[in-house]
Amino acid sequence: MYKVGLTGGIGCGKSTVSELFKQHNTPIIDADEIAHALVMPGQKALKQISDYFGQRCLFTDGSLNRASLREIIFNDAEKKHQLENIVHPLVYAEIERQLSLLTGPYCIIAIPLLIETKMQSLVDHILVIDCPMEMQINRVKLRDNLNNSQITAMINSQVSRAERLTHADSIIDNTQDITFLDKQVNNLHKQFLKQTK
Image 1 (cartoon, rainbow, N blue to C red):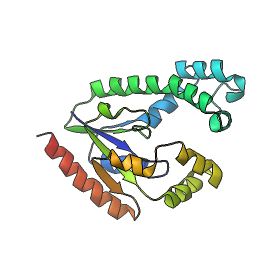
Image 2 (tube, rainbow, N blue to C red):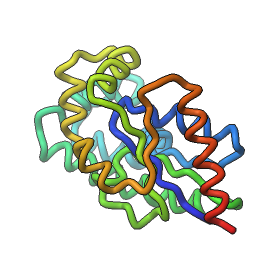
Image 3 (cartoon, rainbow, N blue to C red):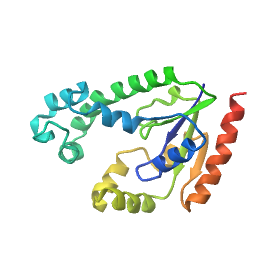
Image 4 (cartoon, one colour):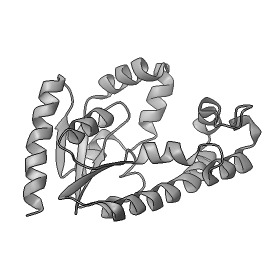
């Protein structure tokens, strides 16, 4: 199976593009969805997080308080690194497990931090969703209700736009409307099908 790694900065539109590929019955493995599932109550990752960061990162019902955890790691590179050490290996193990169950010509593996985690070798093709930083900020602001400095810090914690683009085998331009996006996805879908013949 041909593996396409879908990546891009926060607010670039990875979820929207994944949904468009889904319309072609393309299997999607989503690292964010896996990470969310791994930190649900009763899961190993949540226990490791609460053991390391303490009860302040949990709500009273035992679920993860993401806002509190974000605040803890916001200006502390060491703590951010520790969180990644807990979550990333578990995410990649689950990606491998899901891959082993798939059939079909190609699949999309949506991994926001593909470049940052240096896991490019996991995929055959790197597809980068791209848009300017101002667009990222506006989209995240609408979606997550965060302020500019929080969003900018999140963007700056990822590899730069220029660096990400140097790794791209294909680029989707997400600066226009959904029709423009859909056309690019259709073209890439045809291209990926050819790769598997």
